[in-house]
Amino acid sequence: MNDMTLDNHIAKPLQTAKIEFWVATAIFVFSIFSLSTSYEPNQWFFERAGIEYHFYKHYFWPQLIRYTLLYLGFLFLNFRIIPKLMQKEHVPLYSLLLLGLYLAYSFAAGVLDTYTKSYLLTWDDGSEQYYGLIFQDSFRHALFLLLLVGIYTFIKYAGLYLIANATAISARYRIINRDTLTAFIFWMISVFLLMVFNIEFEVTLTLAVVSLCALLLYCGAYYYIIPNALKSTRPFRKYLFVSLLVVVLAYLPVAFLILMFMHDEDHAFGLSFFNSLFQLFVTAPFVWFLFKRQMKGKEEVFVLKKELGTTSANLDFLRSQINPHFLFNALNTLYGTALQENSERTAQGIQMLGDMMRFMLHENHQQKILLSREIEYMRNYIDLQLLRTSSSPNISIETKIEEVLGEKYIAPMLLIPFIENAFKHGISLKHKSWIRITLHTDKDKLYFDVYNSKQKKSEQDPEKDKSGIGLKNVKQRLELLYSERHELIIRDTPEEFFVHLTLQL
Image 1: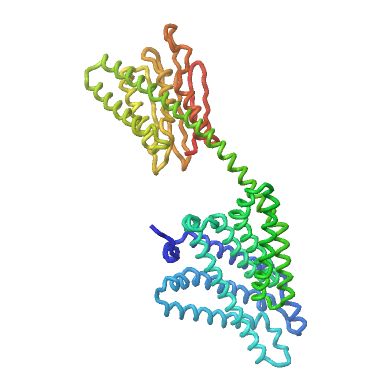
Image 2: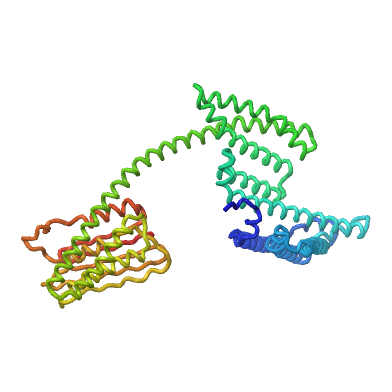
């Protein structure tokens, strides 16, 4: 479905709303804290006017009220009025609310300034001009704040739209990708912050023009100039020549663009000349360096993909070794049960084996399965072994396997080799033996323990000195699939065997 409409991003609940709320709240709290640490601001103006200065009356309480009004006004504007106006819902009502909010804050700010700027009362022209100046300034300042909110709203929704549709935009315009869109959004935010903090206009304009031109040169060089230059015998020299040509051709257009904001020809042409030098000696070499570095990275990725193909083949081979191993163990269990009792328990064992084989056929070859399915397979295996061992009083098998809540995934057949190893080496129908199995999860971590006794093999046992392929394979699979995301502890003594596995799912 095509989602390239701005309305969708306005109507949907945005996760950014929480971030905006907490950022605004943090700024408000910090502003309140800064009030209490201020050192007698404006005191000099009051003393010069011959008026006794009181910190709380002439600064603290007026500023506290002002910051509170700004905070509440922003929340009301950003989360209520602006979204409704952009969705064109009850436009007359919310337009009146916007106008009322502007007038109310302007008047309130003017009243507060009669306290913070009361030293102006000593002017020769009298209080009438003093009050006029105060309220004119408060209305202009409120209009400026409203303009800043409008710019912020444009940046926010434009940024959300561009990021959400980055793939579709890149498919339509090759020169535009997610990185360039992110850089453009960052540029808009940076210019906005310069305006918010009331940085000198010439500094703001210089940074805005130079950074925007650098972004445009980056896009053009990265996708057109450098790829074409690489076809020549001296690519770097050709790249610099074309970049120089682009910078020279852009000199006059940039100068005229600056003249739209700065009505001083000398400053405008001087700033454009500085921009040309910056792009030629800083941006152009830096873009070349980034491009060559990415090419080197792509070559490394290609080599890694070839190695990954070999690793995947080895992993498939390891899986093919696992399946027959379990099948033979299960068949041996059914054979022993059939010799001991009638067909009822044998039928039960066959049903369990059928469930296990179905799991192995349909899910064992997937990259990941639900952890609950892996646990179900483990329970079937343990129950199948209990058919063989339940009649022996010398055997104790304890399990504490918690139910898994939520959709947690794990590589298939990753845990069962430890349990199978415990039954293979820890159970004897003639001697006292035991197995303890525990499994539980905490958030995205799995904790798995298998603790069992060890039985001495008879001299005639062909597997007396063999450890089997189960544990060896599972160690290899853990290294391949959960590298740096698992901890495997094995303690092996003549009397007991202990395994502890911690796994980041």
